[in-house]
Length: 272
Ligand code: GRG
Image 1 (cartoon, rainbow, N blue to C red):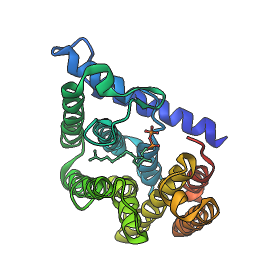
Image 2 (cartoon, rainbow, N blue to C red; image 1 turned 180 degrees about the vertical axis):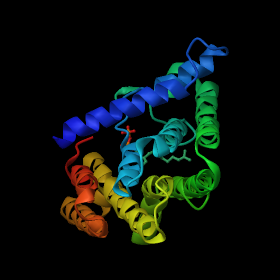
Image 3 (cartoon, rainbow, N blue to C red; image 1 turned 90 degrees about the vertical axis):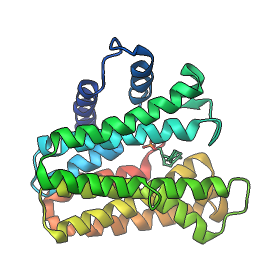
Image 4 (tube, rainbow, N blue to C red; image 1 turned 45 degrees about the horizontal axis):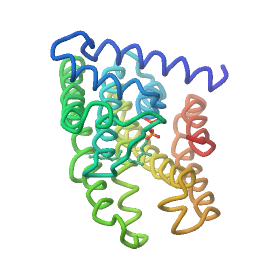
């Protein structure tokens, strides 16, 4: 099957579940549910849940074992974008070509929509993921988005706003602000499939390299970060090197890894 068609179908499946998990716009208090839905359904690529699902599949796991956690990851990603856009952080008026949450609903409601998405994410995992596996997913995800993960990367990014970035700090920001959630996504796929230690480790590393490459490509698109500091040529070479390294880690899965490798290649060629 054509990879674009395949990913479109998978995205539709994820969207259907997200729709089921999110409270209805008609449910009281309507304002918060409307704000949550506005940002979740504003055109995200669903990269992280797709990676979680494909990582589970490569370990011979079933879609139903990973779908709740995959949706939870997307809700957390959405919360991070809403908060990142706030005046106190990046102060952005548009996200995915649409007005940002605080522009539509006001700052207080945008903050609360992010908070509520974060809470809902862990509620979904607690309700749907079973036993030890569920606890392992919660542990991985909470570590990935805390001070030694996404929040850690974000605070260093804010600290260096309008300051000259050195290579070490830039690597730290890319690793923790962006790549750590990719790593959690691929690892959670393996956890959901009750995979071996070796397979979990390979998928976690795959997610790390893919996530850093994803951020460098983002910088190439926006002419920022890595691309601004090291130039477009080096940024392209580095993202390509990381993708090759990432794909190499999947060789232990043999021909089952074709889709994940195609997704990794897509990261290099994406334009948004
Ligand atoms: C507020 C705790 C906190 C963290 C914010 C995610 C983030 C950290 C900041 C957003 C700004 C940014 C450029 C982050 C790098 C990660 C990234 C490239 C996010 C965009 O991800 P995509 O392209 O988004 O997957 P879509 O729109 O497809 O969902």
